[in-house]
Image (cartoon, rainbow, N blue to C red; front, side, top):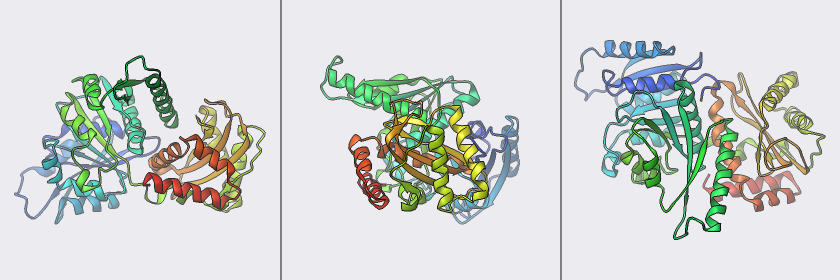
Length: 427
């Protein structure tokens, strides 16, 4: 998470009893510029509760004891939802963290006012189900490969680093009727393992991972989880849709797991759809770089030539992208590399795409790279790039899509291809 400052609005239903939620929030905001906004909303229909100011200050002191800046807010509003949404904007928060204190069943979830928040917000949303939590010896993070799973991996990684805990990433390989030594099942498990390794490389996470073959998803994850774990789950893709909010696989796991659960939902892709970041003038179909450093130079120059980056900032941008590449290769396999760099003051993501027909060596997995996506992201909210990473990973998964990209003769054909794949994926 905090590759840059993170500002979390922590919605406290009862500040006197939610220390676990405050400690969890503080663990996610350990960057020196991280900040918590501990918020309790009082509505006209709520019975007066004594000592709220004192309880909020105590919660802020708890976070301060962990080295994290925390601001208490006692807010009066017509509804909790409206007040929280106003607070997210007023304090420029990019994450909402709330507790879940009801059962995890369809009736309870659908009757909760929190569902309106999870449907409407353009921030990362984290919901914590506390089952008796201090810190975790192991952070267990199942992943299915989507944008929410990517956010779950990064959140889990941040928590594991803060607590010096083990992190284990898990992918379940579902099969029907196959035997354990079935060659197709073995091939499927290898493919999922490659996908999981690619996700970890996307996020620069060095953590163990495991592929578990099973006939269904829930049971093996429950079996893996322990009381001293924290389970970090990506919410289902329909989490913001009222009729599908409950009853999904993540809901079932949250209900049955013996440990506490953190459900995460990435912000809506919105304006950060890949087709909104890449446009015809920032795409080049016939690049011939000498090496990966020359490739990065050319990708940055595309943005300078198209007035997306001021010429005066070229060297700054170039050095930021090169510095990231020096840390480790941004090749993710499947002939694709995603060089990227966070930049201060950038209002939104800027990108370019280059096709290298002969390929160029990025010293990463899978051999030569033909497809280069350069992403410049806002340093003040670096994680806005996660939905975009998920879209690129999904786009480049199929060999037929990569082949179709290589056959495009004009940038407009390539943007049309990207948009068609987005429509098919429901982006």
